[in-house]
Image 1: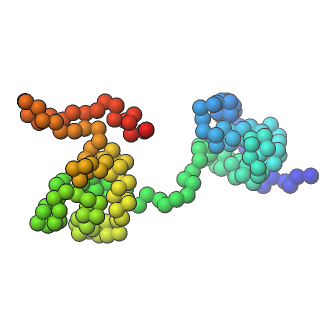
Image 2: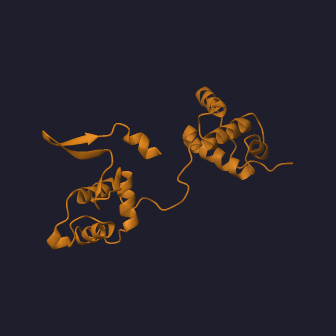
Image 3: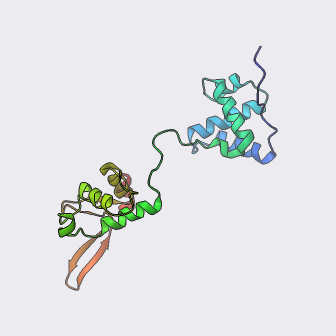
Length: 187
């Protein structure tokens, strides 16, 4: 005999039922969304949490109970996994833009002591400037921000945009862009 369910699944609307069935059959959805949809459908058909866990390829009925409780509160958005651990983003979009803007400016030889940015010289500049918001920024964080923005370390010892380059032509200096840059970044 199974225990009484603390939070039984609420009645599904017709739209929710259709969407859960679609996700459960879908092969292009993430495996966690498919498994959660299958578990919810099994519970809706009257299965216990343990049986629903087995039907959806999970081991624990407790996980199904958590999905049911979350579905009761949030609806279909309960199928989407939440942040699964790791450090939260410390620097928001505005601060990332400030980092990129500083990296795009050439360093001042008299102030920074370098003619090209390295991660440590960029770190020193950011720590000196501002109101202390970058007081603890690491070189790894700088590398991540630059890399996510599409910059890479070049042999010229500077950070530059990977999908564009300045080329000298008879008519002058022109910017050449690579149309396949996004595909190359994924490789």
